[in-house]
Length: 434
Image 1 (cartoon, rainbow, N blue to C red):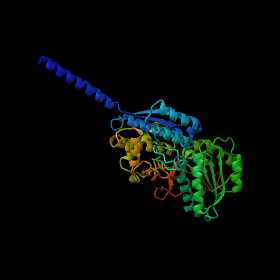
Image 2: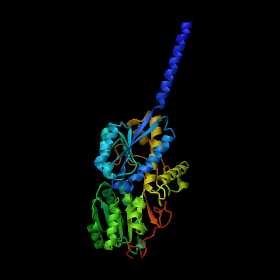
Image 3: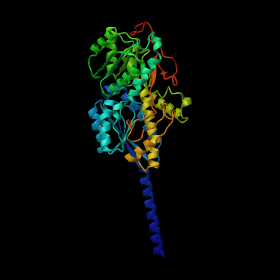
Image 4: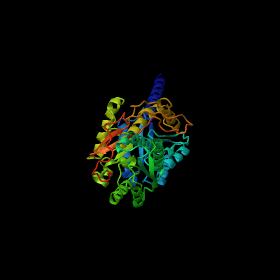
């Protein structure tokens, strides 16, 4: 009897031990995320570092909260150094050496195009927070690469539509309006310019110049000379920085005049850098981007989102105190990272059983979020496998904002507009052709 009790006691003790071990094992479940942005090189100051800050704020928030559905979160950060080859090498290193479960981030389209192809080959899940070029996904039929962000052609079409609806302010008809389309010649610039070109044809504008240039070019004076000869009423520009600053400084020196300058994300989304390089000349410039989360109409958002937006703003202010305008880049990365942690990861774990690429992929395809369901205002729905733009959010959209007196205002589309656009550039401003 004593022996039986001892044996039973031993079994119970063993069960208890194994129970503890099992519990510990359950608690040790984790998802390891490789996060890649440009922390050095020209793209860092052009918006990539701000994207990193936004993503890190959100990742840290979920780490502090204890993870998601019993899974701890571990982030391994890497610097793409503003170089596509480094971005590819770091992605492969994170997958093969660090053994990450997925990759998140990416700013430059020139990096995203090759990296997405490599990650797809490795059959790892990739969640893109930024790089907008359609070439990343168009016709690729990737299974594991997803981008909740708006695509580049949407940017180009949006800005042309915006000017088309405001053409009367220039005192001209659409056919009389002279427009120039200039862009950095990487995947990002080419894609936006393609949308610009299609939008210009639809609007009936007179395209007087369309030209690309290397973002690393040390001198853009020849391009400025061409712009002067073309005499555009509106310049549509897609660039990073410092190329934006270089172009506009040389334009100022050479006396280039126009009626409006419309930028498309990237460097135009970093107001502090624009102001630092150009001073008051940035007044009345336009930028096209997903809406800043601090400009979205809180009344149209899911009620749980405004407190999160407030938290992101407070954390960003700690990281970058004294910034006049919180860059939309911060909110983009924060919103798209939050979307993954709240709407993809829990479904992968609960419905599909884990954090492997197949479970994450299926969870992403299940997304069906209506407008107002993200901090960026748009909804989320990915097309079925085999679609032309598989992996691209069909419900995303950018907005046009205008910088006026160190503040940013949404001016297009009308459903999101905070005020009317100031067009053309007021008399007396540096680039005004009035």
